[in-house]
Image (cartoon, rainbow, N blue to C red; front, side):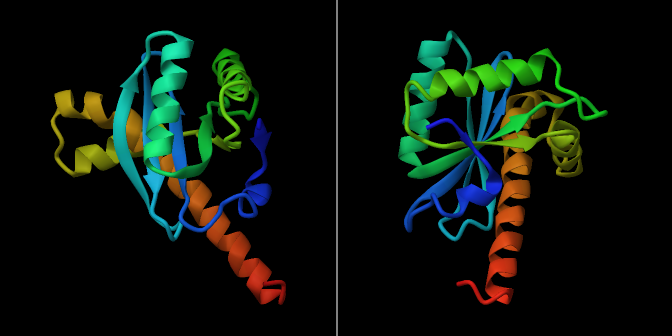
Length: 164
C-alpha cells in the first residue's frame, strides 16, 4: 500500500497495533512508535542508512517488532509550503517502500520538528555528542506525536457527532 491521508489512518489500525513515526535523513532514519492506545510517541534506536534495500529490510524489521499497523513519515516541506528535493526524495522512498510492504504511510509536515527535538534535548541537558545520536529519533517522536494528536482530535470529533 502506498500513501494514505491522516483521516484514512484511523480506519486502518487494528487493536494491538501501533503507529510508527519516521524521520528520513540522508545518513540515518529516525524512528518512534506509539503506545497501543495511540496517544504517546516514544523514540526508538535510529537506523544508519546504507542503501535502499538494506534500509528497507531494517525498517520493516523494526516496524514488525513494534507491531506497527502504519507509519507516519515526516515530509520536509519548505517554510513557504513548497516541496523541494528532500520532499521529492521522501515521496520516492515511500513509493519504493510500497513495493516491499503493505504497510500504509502517511505524510506529515515536519517543519521545525528537528528544531523542536533539539530544544527538548538541550532542555534535558543531553550532551552535544548524545544529541547527535538521538536527534533523528527525537524528531520522529515529534512527527508521530503531532499525528497522534490529530488522530485523537478526529476521534473526538467523530464521537461528538454521534458517529462511533
